[in-house]
Length: 245
Length: 199
Figure 1 (cartoon, rainbow over the protein chains, first blue to last red):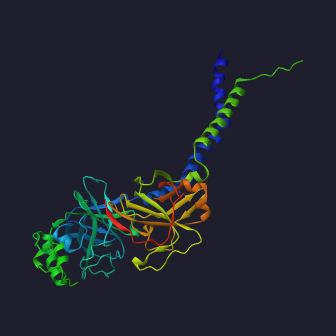
Figure 2 (cartoon, rainbow over the protein chains, first blue to last red):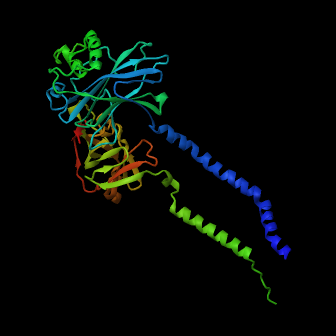
Protein backbone atom coordinates (compact mmCIF):
# COMPACT_ATOMS: atom_id res chain seq x y z
CA UNK A 1 0.00 0.00 0.00
CA UNK A 2 2.78 2.38 0.86
CA UNK A 3 4.30 1.98 -2.69
CA UNK A 4 0.98 3.01 -4.32
CA UNK A 5 0.82 6.21 -2.20
CA UNK A 6 4.31 7.41 -3.06
CA UNK A 7 4.12 6.87 -6.87
CA UNK A 8 2.27 10.11 -7.85
CA UNK A 9 4.79 12.22 -5.92
CA UNK A 10 7.62 10.60 -7.75
CA UNK A 11 5.80 11.22 -11.09
CA UNK A 12 5.31 14.94 -10.31
CA UNK A 13 8.95 15.38 -9.48
CA UNK A 14 10.03 13.65 -12.62
CA UNK A 15 7.77 15.89 -14.80
CA UNK A 16 9.28 19.01 -13.28
CA UNK A 17 12.77 17.63 -13.64
CA UNK A 18 12.12 16.84 -17.27
CA UNK A 19 10.46 20.17 -18.10
CA UNK A 20 11.91 22.76 -15.78
CA UNK A 21 14.38 24.29 -18.28
CA UNK A 22 11.84 24.73 -21.08
CA UNK A 23 9.32 26.17 -18.61
CA UNK A 24 11.91 28.57 -17.20
CA UNK A 25 12.96 29.53 -20.73
CA UNK A 26 9.37 30.32 -21.68
CA UNK A 27 8.91 32.28 -18.45
CA UNK A 28 11.90 34.44 -19.35
CA UNK A 29 11.63 34.63 -23.15
CA UNK A 30 7.92 35.39 -23.43
CA UNK A 31 7.92 38.58 -21.31
CA UNK A 32 11.30 39.48 -22.80
CA UNK A 33 9.91 39.27 -26.33
CA UNK A 34 6.91 41.41 -25.42
CA UNK A 35 9.14 44.04 -23.79
CA UNK A 36 11.62 44.09 -26.67
CA UNK A 37 8.98 44.44 -29.36
CA UNK A 38 6.94 47.14 -27.64
CA UNK A 39 9.50 49.18 -25.70
CA UNK A 40 10.33 51.50 -28.60
CA UNK A 41 6.69 52.41 -29.21
CA UNK A 42 6.12 52.77 -25.47
CA UNK A 43 8.93 55.25 -25.01
CA UNK A 44 7.83 57.18 -28.12
CA UNK A 45 4.33 57.32 -26.70
CA UNK A 46 5.57 58.48 -23.31
CA UNK A 47 7.78 61.14 -24.85
CA UNK A 48 4.87 62.44 -26.88
CA UNK A 49 2.66 62.93 -23.87
CA UNK A 50 2.20 66.40 -22.43
CA UNK A 51 2.14 64.88 -19.01
CA UNK A 52 4.57 66.94 -17.00
CA UNK A 53 3.08 70.38 -16.57
CA UNK A 54 4.84 72.79 -14.24
CA UNK A 55 1.78 74.67 -13.05
CA UNK A 56 2.36 78.19 -11.77
CA UNK A 57 -0.29 80.04 -9.78
CA UNK A 58 -1.18 83.62 -10.64
CA UNK A 59 1.50 86.08 -9.61
CA UNK A 60 4.12 83.47 -8.82
CA UNK A 61 7.31 82.83 -10.75
CA UNK A 62 8.74 79.53 -11.90
CA UNK A 63 12.04 78.27 -13.21
CA UNK A 64 12.01 76.41 -16.51
CA UNK A 65 15.25 75.31 -18.11
CA UNK A 66 17.16 77.58 -15.75
CA UNK A 67 15.12 80.66 -16.71
CA UNK A 68 12.61 82.41 -14.45
CA UNK A 69 9.20 83.30 -15.86
CA UNK A 70 6.57 85.41 -14.12
CA UNK A 71 3.33 86.88 -15.39
CA UNK A 72 3.16 90.53 -14.42
CA UNK A 73 -0.03 91.56 -16.19
CA UNK A 74 -2.90 90.22 -18.26
CA UNK A 75 -5.73 91.81 -20.19
CA UNK A 76 -8.55 90.68 -22.42
CA UNK A 77 -10.16 92.75 -25.18
CA UNK A 78 -13.56 91.56 -26.33
CA UNK A 79 -14.66 91.78 -29.93
CA UNK A 80 -17.60 94.07 -30.47
CA UNK A 81 -16.50 96.52 -27.78
CA UNK A 82 -14.91 99.88 -28.51
CA UNK A 83 -11.51 98.46 -27.71
CA UNK A 84 -12.06 95.53 -30.04
CA UNK A 85 -13.23 97.77 -32.87
CA UNK A 86 -10.20 100.00 -32.50
CA UNK A 87 -7.97 96.97 -32.91
CA UNK A 88 -10.15 95.71 -35.81
CA UNK A 89 -10.80 92.59 -33.81
CA UNK A 90 -13.50 90.30 -35.19
CA UNK A 91 -16.70 90.73 -33.11
CA UNK A 92 -16.78 86.96 -32.48
CA UNK A 93 -13.24 86.88 -31.09
CA UNK A 94 -11.48 87.91 -27.90
CA UNK A 95 -7.87 89.03 -27.68
CA UNK A 96 -5.97 87.90 -24.61
CA UNK A 97 -2.60 89.46 -23.81
CA UNK A 98 -0.15 88.51 -21.08
CA UNK A 99 3.06 90.26 -20.12
CA UNK A 100 5.83 88.23 -18.53
CA UNK A 101 9.08 89.15 -16.86
CA UNK A 102 11.78 86.73 -17.94
CA UNK A 103 15.10 86.36 -16.14
CA UNK A 104 17.51 84.07 -18.00
CA UNK A 105 19.81 81.79 -16.04
CA UNK A 106 23.08 80.11 -16.95
CA UNK A 107 21.54 78.20 -19.83
CA UNK A 108 19.20 80.51 -21.72
CA UNK A 109 15.88 79.30 -23.07
CA UNK A 110 16.47 80.96 -26.44
CA UNK A 111 13.53 79.52 -28.37
CA UNK A 112 10.22 78.13 -27.32
CA UNK A 113 6.64 77.46 -28.35
CA UNK A 114 4.21 79.96 -26.85
CA UNK A 115 0.53 79.18 -26.58
CA UNK A 116 -2.50 80.38 -24.67
CA UNK A 117 -4.84 77.77 -23.25
CA UNK A 118 -8.32 78.44 -21.93
CA UNK A 119 -11.49 76.85 -20.62
CA UNK A 120 -15.16 77.80 -20.66
CA UNK A 121 -18.37 76.11 -19.47
CA UNK A 122 -18.98 74.81 -23.01
CA UNK A 123 -15.38 73.63 -23.40
CA UNK A 124 -13.98 72.50 -20.05
CA UNK A 125 -11.19 70.70 -21.90
CA UNK A 126 -8.16 72.96 -21.98
CA UNK A 127 -8.05 74.19 -25.60
CA UNK A 128 -4.90 75.84 -26.96
CA UNK A 129 -4.11 78.56 -29.46
CA UNK A 130 -0.72 79.56 -30.84
CA UNK A 131 0.42 82.90 -29.47
CA UNK A 132 1.55 85.95 -31.41
CA UNK A 133 0.07 84.79 -34.73
CA UNK A 134 -3.22 85.76 -36.39
CA UNK A 135 -3.41 88.90 -34.25
CA UNK A 136 -5.77 91.77 -35.11
CA UNK A 137 -4.50 93.99 -37.90
CA UNK A 138 -4.06 96.96 -35.58
CA UNK A 139 -2.37 95.10 -32.73
CA UNK A 140 0.34 97.53 -31.70
CA UNK A 141 4.08 97.01 -32.04
CA UNK A 142 5.51 95.61 -28.84
CA UNK A 143 8.49 97.94 -28.61
CA UNK A 144 11.41 96.49 -26.71
CA UNK A 145 9.38 93.56 -25.49
CA UNK A 146 10.07 90.16 -27.02
CA UNK A 147 7.47 87.96 -28.65
CA UNK A 148 9.39 84.71 -28.21
CA UNK A 149 11.95 83.33 -25.79
CA UNK A 150 15.16 85.14 -26.62
CA UNK A 151 18.87 84.82 -26.06
CA UNK A 152 19.54 88.15 -24.38
CA UNK A 153 22.93 87.09 -23.01
CA UNK A 154 21.53 86.78 -19.53
CA UNK A 155 19.74 90.14 -19.48
CA UNK A 156 16.17 90.12 -18.12
CA UNK A 157 13.52 91.01 -20.67
CA UNK A 158 9.80 91.44 -21.05
CA UNK A 159 7.84 88.85 -23.03
CA UNK A 160 4.45 89.60 -24.63
CA UNK A 161 2.15 86.65 -25.28
CA UNK A 162 -1.04 87.44 -27.22
CA UNK A 163 -3.64 85.25 -28.87
CA UNK A 164 -7.03 85.62 -30.52
CA UNK A 165 -9.55 83.12 -29.20
CA UNK A 166 -13.28 82.57 -29.76
CA UNK A 167 -15.49 84.92 -27.77
CA UNK A 168 -16.02 83.61 -24.24
CA UNK A 169 -13.47 80.81 -24.64
CA UNK A 170 -11.56 81.96 -21.54
CA UNK A 171 -14.60 82.42 -19.34
CA UNK A 172 -13.50 79.99 -16.63
CA UNK A 173 -9.72 79.97 -16.93
CA UNK A 174 -6.71 80.88 -19.02
CA UNK A 175 -3.02 80.07 -19.02
CA UNK A 176 0.17 80.88 -20.88
CA UNK A 177 1.89 77.68 -22.02
CA UNK A 178 5.64 77.72 -22.63
CA UNK A 179 7.39 74.71 -24.08
CA UNK A 180 10.94 74.24 -25.31
CA UNK A 181 11.64 71.22 -27.47
CA UNK A 182 14.69 70.07 -25.52
CA UNK A 183 12.83 70.25 -22.22
CA UNK A 184 9.72 68.28 -23.23
CA UNK A 185 7.68 66.56 -21.96
CA UNK A 186 8.04 69.19 -19.22
CA UNK A 187 6.25 72.43 -20.01
CA UNK A 188 5.33 75.56 -18.12
CA UNK A 189 1.74 76.54 -17.51
CA UNK A 190 1.26 79.99 -15.97
CA UNK A 191 -2.16 80.89 -14.70
CA UNK A 192 -3.72 84.13 -15.94
CA UNK A 193 -6.34 86.37 -14.43
CA UNK A 194 -7.10 88.87 -17.18
CA UNK A 195 -8.83 92.16 -16.57
CA UNK A 196 -11.25 93.27 -19.21
CA UNK A 197 -10.38 96.19 -21.46
CA UNK A 198 -13.66 97.42 -22.88
CA UNK A 199 -12.23 100.46 -24.59
CA UNK A 200 -8.70 101.40 -25.39
CA UNK A 201 -9.45 105.02 -24.69
CA UNK A 202 -10.89 104.31 -21.24
CA UNK A 203 -8.70 104.03 -18.21
CA UNK A 204 -8.72 100.53 -16.77
CA UNK A 205 -7.92 99.33 -13.30
CA UNK A 206 -4.26 99.88 -12.68
CA UNK A 207 -4.25 99.41 -8.95
CA UNK A 208 -2.64 95.98 -8.90
CA UNK A 209 0.93 95.69 -7.85
CA UNK A 210 1.72 93.96 -11.13
CA UNK A 211 0.31 96.85 -13.09
CA UNK A 212 2.15 99.35 -10.97
CA UNK A 213 5.37 97.51 -11.48
CA UNK A 214 4.81 97.32 -15.22
CA UNK A 215 3.78 100.93 -15.57
CA UNK A 216 7.13 102.59 -15.01
CA UNK A 217 8.92 100.21 -17.30
CA UNK A 218 6.33 100.70 -19.99
CA UNK A 219 6.62 104.43 -19.75
CA UNK A 220 10.33 104.04 -20.19
CA UNK A 221 9.75 101.89 -23.25
CA UNK A 222 7.29 104.44 -24.61
CA UNK A 223 5.12 101.65 -25.78
CA UNK A 224 1.98 102.75 -27.61
CA UNK A 225 -1.28 103.36 -25.85
CA UNK A 226 -2.92 100.14 -26.94
CA UNK A 227 -0.13 98.09 -25.52
CA UNK A 228 -0.34 100.23 -22.41
CA UNK A 229 -4.06 99.59 -22.10
CA UNK A 230 -3.64 95.92 -22.73
CA UNK A 231 -0.95 95.84 -20.09
CA UNK A 232 -3.26 97.57 -17.61
CA UNK A 233 -1.31 100.80 -17.64
CA UNK A 234 -4.27 103.03 -18.34
CA UNK A 235 -2.65 106.06 -16.76
CA UNK A 236 -0.51 106.61 -19.85
CA UNK A 237 -3.71 107.80 -21.67
CA UNK A 238 -2.16 107.85 -25.13
CA UNK A 239 -4.31 107.33 -28.12
CA UNK A 240 -4.05 103.81 -29.43
CA UNK A 241 -4.11 105.18 -32.95
CA UNK A 242 -0.64 106.63 -32.47
CA UNK A 243 1.62 103.69 -31.95
CA UNK A 244 5.18 104.49 -31.04
CA UNK A 245 6.82 101.10 -30.70
CA UNK B 1 -5.57 -10.86 -37.53
CA UNK B 2 -6.62 -7.35 -36.86
CA UNK B 3 -4.11 -5.41 -34.89
CA UNK B 4 -5.43 -3.70 -31.82
CA UNK B 5 -4.32 -0.08 -31.28
CA UNK B 6 -4.06 1.02 -27.69
CA UNK B 7 -5.16 4.60 -27.16
CA UNK B 8 -3.90 6.06 -23.93
CA UNK B 9 -5.37 9.03 -22.07
CA UNK B 10 -2.13 10.87 -22.62
CA UNK B 11 -2.37 10.50 -26.37
CA UNK B 12 -5.94 11.77 -26.36
CA UNK B 13 -4.93 14.81 -24.31
CA UNK B 14 -2.01 15.60 -26.60
CA UNK B 15 -4.20 15.36 -29.68
CA UNK B 16 -6.87 17.57 -28.14
CA UNK B 17 -4.24 20.12 -27.11
CA UNK B 18 -2.90 20.33 -30.64
CA UNK B 19 -6.39 20.65 -32.13
CA UNK B 20 -7.39 23.38 -29.65
CA UNK B 21 -4.13 25.27 -30.24
CA UNK B 22 -4.59 25.15 -34.01
CA UNK B 23 -8.22 26.26 -33.71
CA UNK B 24 -7.18 29.14 -31.43
CA UNK B 25 -4.53 30.17 -33.96
CA UNK B 26 -7.12 30.29 -36.73
CA UNK B 27 -9.54 32.29 -34.57
CA UNK B 28 -6.87 34.78 -33.46
CA UNK B 29 -5.70 35.23 -37.06
CA UNK B 30 -9.26 35.75 -38.18
CA UNK B 31 -10.22 38.39 -35.63
CA UNK B 32 -6.98 40.39 -35.53
CA UNK B 33 -5.80 42.83 -38.22
CA UNK B 34 -2.91 41.91 -40.47
CA UNK B 35 -1.10 43.39 -43.44
CA UNK B 36 -1.83 47.09 -43.94
CA UNK B 37 -4.68 46.93 -41.45
CA UNK B 38 -2.23 46.72 -38.54
CA UNK B 39 -1.45 50.42 -38.85
CA UNK B 40 -4.67 51.56 -40.49
CA UNK B 41 -6.37 54.74 -39.23
CA UNK B 42 -9.78 54.71 -37.57
CA UNK B 43 -12.28 56.14 -40.04
CA UNK B 44 -15.14 58.45 -39.07
CA UNK B 45 -17.35 58.14 -42.13
CA UNK B 46 -19.96 60.55 -43.45
CA UNK B 47 -21.45 62.14 -46.56
CA UNK B 48 -21.32 65.60 -48.11
CA UNK B 49 -22.42 68.17 -45.51
CA UNK B 50 -21.99 65.89 -42.49
CA UNK B 51 -19.91 67.32 -39.65
CA UNK B 52 -17.38 64.69 -38.58
CA UNK B 53 -15.13 64.90 -35.54
CA UNK B 54 -11.85 63.05 -35.08
CA UNK B 55 -9.04 63.29 -32.57
CA UNK B 56 -7.57 66.55 -33.86
CA UNK B 57 -10.07 67.99 -36.34
CA UNK B 58 -13.77 68.63 -36.77
CA UNK B 59 -15.55 69.83 -39.89
CA UNK B 60 -17.29 69.00 -43.12
CA UNK B 61 -16.92 68.84 -46.88
CA UNK B 62 -19.62 71.16 -48.18
CA UNK B 63 -19.36 70.80 -51.96
CA UNK B 64 -17.42 69.10 -54.73
CA UNK B 65 -16.93 70.53 -58.24
CA UNK B 66 -14.85 69.73 -61.32
CA UNK B 67 -12.71 72.37 -63.00
CA UNK B 68 -10.50 72.66 -66.06
CA UNK B 69 -8.88 75.95 -65.01
CA UNK B 70 -8.72 78.47 -62.20
CA UNK B 71 -8.91 82.21 -61.73
CA UNK B 72 -6.80 83.25 -58.75
CA UNK B 73 -6.15 86.82 -59.88
CA UNK B 74 -8.22 88.09 -56.94
CA UNK B 75 -5.35 87.08 -54.67
CA UNK B 76 -2.61 88.12 -57.07
CA UNK B 77 -1.88 84.70 -58.52
CA UNK B 78 -1.61 84.29 -62.30
CA UNK B 79 -1.53 80.50 -62.21
CA UNK B 80 -4.54 79.02 -64.03
CA UNK B 81 -3.96 75.36 -63.25
CA UNK B 82 -3.04 73.87 -66.64
CA UNK B 83 -3.51 70.11 -66.49
CA UNK B 84 -3.86 67.09 -68.75
CA UNK B 85 -6.51 65.77 -66.37
CA UNK B 86 -9.28 67.44 -64.43
CA UNK B 87 -9.31 69.29 -61.14
CA UNK B 88 -11.55 68.09 -58.35
CA UNK B 89 -12.35 71.16 -56.26
CA UNK B 90 -13.41 70.31 -52.72
CA UNK B 91 -14.91 73.09 -50.62
CA UNK B 92 -14.56 72.33 -46.93
CA UNK B 93 -14.64 73.86 -43.47
CA UNK B 94 -12.49 72.55 -40.62
CA UNK B 95 -11.38 73.56 -37.14
CA UNK B 96 -9.05 71.96 -34.62
CA UNK B 97 -10.60 70.21 -31.65
CA UNK B 98 -8.26 70.98 -28.75
CA UNK B 99 -4.93 72.33 -29.99
CA UNK B 100 -3.61 73.82 -33.24
CA UNK B 101 -3.53 71.30 -36.05
CA UNK B 102 -3.38 70.97 -39.83
CA UNK B 103 -5.04 69.03 -42.62
CA UNK B 104 -2.27 66.51 -43.14
CA UNK B 105 -2.13 65.52 -46.82
CA UNK B 106 -5.83 65.28 -47.68
CA UNK B 107 -6.57 62.40 -50.05
CA UNK B 108 -9.10 61.68 -52.76
CA UNK B 109 -9.60 57.97 -53.35
CA UNK B 110 -11.29 56.74 -56.52
CA UNK B 111 -11.30 52.94 -56.69
CA UNK B 112 -7.76 51.72 -56.14
CA UNK B 113 -6.19 55.11 -56.93
CA UNK B 114 -5.42 57.63 -54.18
CA UNK B 115 -4.61 61.24 -55.08
CA UNK B 116 -2.99 63.68 -52.66
CA UNK B 117 -4.04 67.32 -52.56
CA UNK B 118 -2.03 69.42 -54.99
CA UNK B 119 0.92 71.47 -53.82
CA UNK B 120 0.89 73.55 -57.02
CA UNK B 121 -1.08 76.34 -55.35
CA UNK B 122 0.37 75.94 -51.91
CA UNK B 123 -0.40 79.25 -50.27
CA UNK B 124 -4.07 79.48 -51.08
CA UNK B 125 -5.53 76.10 -50.30
CA UNK B 126 -7.13 74.97 -47.07
CA UNK B 127 -4.58 72.22 -46.44
CA UNK B 128 -1.93 74.91 -45.93
CA UNK B 129 -3.89 76.69 -43.23
CA UNK B 130 -3.36 76.24 -39.52
CA UNK B 131 -6.51 74.94 -37.87
CA UNK B 132 -7.48 76.47 -34.53
CA UNK B 133 -9.98 75.35 -31.90
CA UNK B 134 -13.31 77.14 -32.20
CA UNK B 135 -12.25 79.11 -35.29
CA UNK B 136 -12.92 77.16 -38.46
CA UNK B 137 -11.21 77.81 -41.79
CA UNK B 138 -13.36 77.60 -44.90
CA UNK B 139 -11.63 77.14 -48.24
CA UNK B 140 -10.68 74.85 -51.10
CA UNK B 141 -8.71 71.63 -51.40
CA UNK B 142 -7.61 70.82 -54.95
CA UNK B 143 -6.93 67.39 -56.45
CA UNK B 144 -5.48 66.86 -59.94
CA UNK B 145 -7.12 63.70 -61.22
CA UNK B 146 -6.83 61.57 -64.37
CA UNK B 147 -9.84 61.77 -66.67
CA UNK B 148 -10.00 57.99 -66.81
CA UNK B 149 -10.51 57.85 -63.04
CA UNK B 150 -13.40 60.32 -63.24
CA UNK B 151 -14.95 58.32 -66.07
CA UNK B 152 -14.79 55.08 -64.11
CA UNK B 153 -17.68 53.61 -62.18
CA UNK B 154 -15.67 54.04 -58.97
CA UNK B 155 -16.04 57.83 -59.32
CA UNK B 156 -19.52 57.39 -57.92
CA UNK B 157 -18.05 56.10 -54.66
CA UNK B 158 -15.07 58.41 -54.24
CA UNK B 159 -13.79 59.34 -50.80
CA UNK B 160 -12.23 62.53 -49.48
CA UNK B 161 -9.94 61.64 -46.56
CA UNK B 162 -8.70 64.05 -43.89
CA UNK B 163 -5.95 62.64 -41.70
CA UNK B 164 -5.48 63.55 -38.04
CA UNK B 165 -1.70 63.37 -38.29
CA UNK B 166 0.94 63.27 -41.01
CA UNK B 167 1.55 59.52 -40.96
CA UNK B 168 -2.05 58.73 -40.05
CA UNK B 169 -1.03 55.52 -38.33
CA UNK B 170 -3.50 54.18 -35.79
CA UNK B 171 -5.08 57.61 -35.62
CA UNK B 172 -8.47 59.03 -36.49
CA UNK B 173 -9.33 59.93 -40.07
CA UNK B 174 -12.37 61.74 -41.45
CA UNK B 175 -13.74 60.05 -44.57
CA UNK B 176 -16.38 61.79 -46.69
CA UNK B 177 -18.17 59.79 -49.41
CA UNK B 178 -18.65 61.87 -52.54
CA UNK B 179 -20.16 61.18 -55.97
CA UNK B 180 -18.08 62.66 -58.78
CA UNK B 181 -20.20 61.34 -61.64
CA UNK B 182 -22.15 63.70 -63.85
CA UNK B 183 -20.63 66.90 -62.52
CA UNK B 184 -20.07 69.66 -65.09
CA UNK B 185 -16.45 70.65 -65.73
CA UNK B 186 -16.25 74.39 -65.05
CA UNK B 187 -13.59 76.78 -66.30
CA UNK B 188 -12.01 79.71 -64.47
CA UNK B 189 -13.17 78.58 -61.05
CA UNK B 190 -12.38 81.43 -58.66
CA UNK B 191 -9.79 80.62 -55.99
CA UNK B 192 -9.49 82.80 -52.90
CA UNK B 193 -7.77 82.49 -49.55
CA UNK B 194 -9.44 80.50 -46.77
CA UNK B 195 -11.66 82.58 -44.50
CA UNK B 196 -12.19 82.26 -40.76
CA UNK B 197 -15.56 81.21 -39.41
CA UNK B 198 -15.97 81.47 -35.65
CA UNK B 199 -17.93 78.44 -34.45
